[in-house]
Every structure is written in structure tokens, then in C-alpha cells.
Length: 190
Image (cartoon, rainbow, N blue to C red; front, top):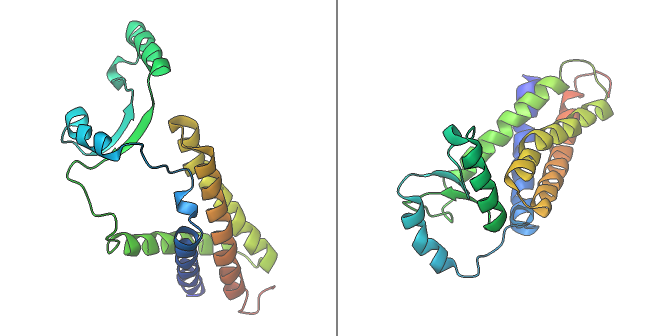
């Protein structure tokens, strides 16, 4: 039960920090730019990408043709001469200002992450500092295994990647402190 309560507390703290980081500090917008002519880009998406939602990398090459040397040479030349884009495409559109579905999913994600972290933090009679260190190590691990590959492979902006690290470190420092305090309350070493 201690771990579940710690997870709920950590999830709430992380969710609130996420709101502050995105709304007040705009960490979620770092590296995201506005297009020079949005209407021109939007008007060509259906024609260029069709009706299938998904992630598109431009220029692209069919995975089945990646072993064809001539195809890859032509792709390499095109990639060097063309702009690059990583596009999350929803042909039907979506009201991104309606967060009624996004907010509960984010809280659930934060709480499940806190549950995994609380489980590890509660495995032994760790000190507060050790538990907090586990939370920080978890934040760095998550960033290195999820955000950094997008920077490396998909060319996400460096400032976006660093802002994500700051968001994760501060968030899990705060949530980890609350969780470490709670887990240490039952008479174990504090």
C-alpha cells in the first residue's frame, strides 16, 4: 500500500510539474517553430501524404528497398539536396486545444511511471538521498532511451532535447522527493 500511495503522490506531483513546465515555462515548446507559410504547407499535405495517418519522414525510402545499392545512392543524393521533415500526420485533423482526452492520459502515464519508480524505491531500506538518486537516475534513463534517440535518428532539435531533459530531471526530482519522503515514513532509514 505504501508503494501505491507513493505512486499516486508522485503521479500528481509529476502531472502538476508538467503543467507548470508546459504552460508557465513553455519547456514543451522549445525547439518547435512556426512555418513561414502554414496555409501553403497544410494545403499540400493531403496531396503529398494521402489519407493514411501516421509518421512520415521526408525524404523517404521504402524499407524493402533499403538493401538496393542504387536506390540508396539515389536516396542519399536526394536527402543531401532536399529539406528534411518528420511529420506526425492526421489527415482528418484534430482539435489540439481540446485536452479532455490528453490530460487524463498524461496523468495516467505519470502515475504509472511513478508506480514503477516507487516499486524500485521501496525495494529496500534505502535512505532518502538514495531514493531520490534512484528517481534522478530513472529520469536520466528515460530521457536517454526515449528522447535522445529522436534527436539522434530523427534530427529533433538539440534545444528541444535539452528542454526535455530539464523537464524530466526537475519533475522527477520533485516527485521523487515526495515519494522518497513517503516511503521513508514507516520507520525505515530516512
